[in-house]
Length: 378
Ligand code: NAD
Ligand code: TYD
Image 1 (spheres, rainbow, N blue to C red):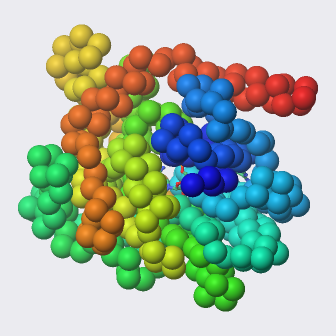
Image 2: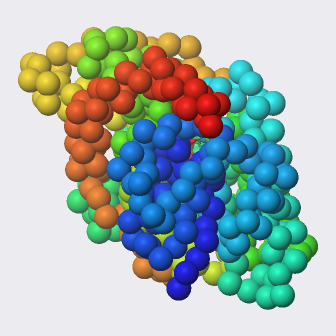
């Protein structure tokens, strides 16, 4: 079946993996990547698919209602996968306004444009889908009750052979009450509420998913894993916030993209699905894995870079533990993470070490100037 799908934020980390998957898997679809190209958006993330006939890029701000509405009409859009957002907690602490503007008003602008366009068609909502990508951070923080870790109650193909540890007995469920703490998660929570309100009020066919921390290639090096890989490579200090015992639940980005594909096509309208890998790690433990992996791959002596670990002042309002229960998605749609964490980390570290040019470009900001010139000259 032919479809015309806008993927917002497709030049970012997760968005670029979703665009790649859809463009390669569905040659009959028209995939439109809508991205403003902020500091986090980088078209170099999509070099391998940019010439495919079913792919196009539109540089636009999701807050620009008129442009988004006109694009939906012009391209007869029937599906939206909405990832565009400001995504870094530390930036949200310094600049909450930008987060409210993009994450809340930008999402509202996407919703309203889709509503007006789809309602104007004879078939209205039929065959339409507005899929909003969100985060587990909207649920707030879980207590870290077992600092040494306990046997996880969950088993999946991937997790059974990996870390398989939990740091408390509570997990985020789809029914867990929202309790965001950072300006980032507060803005994402607000956008989730707007999406559900458009279903409940107007009948828009919406879906929301809340995913745990992602890792993998093309992540902007302000986030823990790419930042630390790059710092270890260059023997720069590794700033560990607080005591380093905060827990995150990590999922390989391509597994998230596969989940998005499954849910976009088979998920039930108005439902929420949690996505996660049952893969909890304390920051300090993951940092030690990164050090030993980088050192081994670069042929340095085992543990040579452990002295880069530098404890710094904690992040304000730092959430203690995130842990997703994604059994609903497993049970109802058959999705499971495919990759063991050890395998995913090895792939990720290798990718960053092999793609130093990509890293140098994004850290120098040169790529921003390049694309600015390119689009201003059109
Ligand atoms: P990212 O920061 O890497 O990418 C965001 C993209 O959105 C960039 O390409 C940026 O240019 C674009 N963008 C920002 N503001 C825009 C605007 N006003 N108009 C158009 N485009 C704009 O983010 P990411 O890590 O890929 O996250 C993508 C989505 O997934 C976000 O909604 C985030 O909340 C959610 N999420 C992320 C994680 C994670 O671990 N990274 C986990 C769960 C959910
Ligand atoms: P991050 O990658 O920013 O993701 P999030 O805050 O959305 O979970 O951070 C992951 C964890 O690593 C989080 O507990 C904060 C911590 N952290 C550090 O200790 N030092 C750092 O320099 C960064 C960026 C993060």
